[in-house]
Image (cartoon, rainbow, N blue to C red; front, side, top):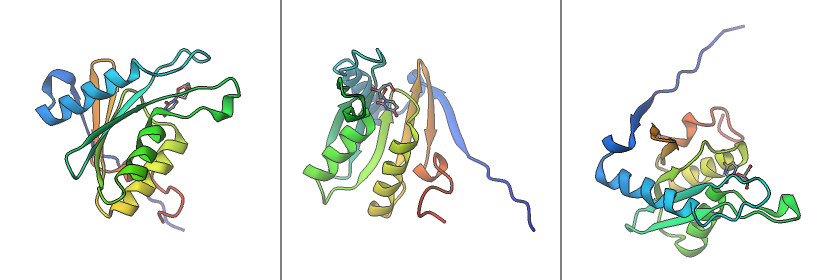
Length: 145
Ligand code: THU
């Protein structure tokens, strides 16, 4: 039997110290949160992805009276990206919250498809956390052993 530890290396910064490309991406995510449809939870989330072709796409959570039918901001934009730009890999994603487990698993698969790490920027008010790979957000995710 062996013991092991897992360390996650990430950056903590704030909106005013992001590089211009990251600041723009987070700004788009924040704006997208404004278009969320969240009458049941009252919790609006926005997400923005930067694709390899330079395109920036945004999404937000869309709820429904049939609760499980709703979708998170991250999945709405990730699936839109793959549906409309299947050849263009996702380089980074900015999210105005910390992603749920399902969205982490979806992001992990996008990263696997891309074959390159996806940078993840998470905002909590003015504080920003930057992870260099989805694997740091979902260690030992399904299929990642
Ligand atoms: N939500 C997201 O959009 N992303 C997440 O990663 C977690 C939760 C949404 C779903 C629901 O509309 C609301 O936030 C409250 O859970």
